[in-house]
Length: 84
Image (tube, rainbow, N blue to C red; front, side):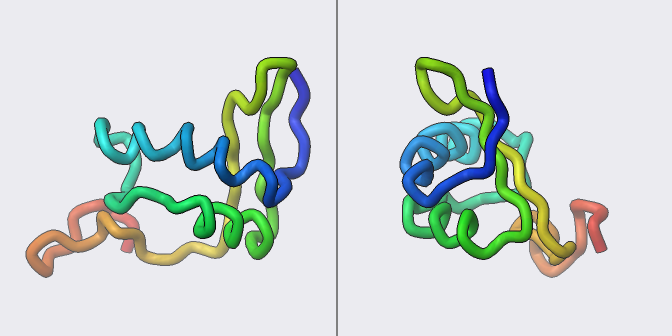
């Protein structure tokens, strides 16, 4: 396994990894599925976006950016994720 800087060509594989997590779990603050285009934009604009990969393909990813309020911050107008 290697960890490397993500490339926009990785966007489809990353979207395939993250979208089931968004749809079926509560372990992310994201509530909207990520399009391939949105992932590609993130790869090209975020200060750090890495992927873990082996001979079978991309296994996971990580990125960071400046803090901003997330989709999960408000529910019925009340802050409920603790990020504010």
